Amino acid sequence: MWLALAWMGCADVTGIDRDRSSGRVVVLKDWFTSALLVKGEESVVLFDAGFRKGTMTRRLADHDLTPADITHVFVTHGHRDHLALLPELDASVHAFAEEAPLIEEELQEELTIDVPLEDGQVVQAGDVEVEVFAVPGHTAGSAVFLVDGVLVLGDAALQNRDEALIPVPEDRSEDPEQLVSSMRALAQRLQPRASEIDWLAPSHSAWMAGFEPLASF
Image (tube, rainbow, N blue to C red):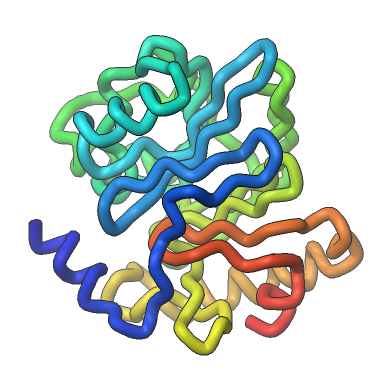
């Protein structure tokens, strides 16, 4: 509960839009956090796994899915408000190896990372293509994913009420300075591909259109 209250206390943050989507990518809102779902023809991919099992199961049901239908799950980082449904899934788990100890600590059980990720890797999850970026700082193995023009940010950044992309509060991150450096490096790295970025999708705030908010981070 304290974790939820801490995030909800960030008054400067815009609210999550439960009905947000872009093509195949849709938001699954779970109270103060969110996961993303991509329903392909050959695979059903989840980005993070929510805060509460029951809520996430109901969100999947809204799209005529059950946890058993998920084929791949990509973990942005190992905090428990992103992991709830993970033990219930019979899906391949994709995360940076550095997150394994944190995931197990938060879940209080062993969990195998089936596909340890590498920075710059492109993963073909059925007919869903996912590009992987390492953004250490919030946690040691924090990841950002690019899928169908949506940059999945996890807790790497938030949108504030001035409609700017900002770091998460310093007390939420293991190394706040490293997080800022990682995000600035990501912006430089993606600048030549700015036209490929339709949306920025933080876990704890509203989406932002286009690449410019990341360029101005």
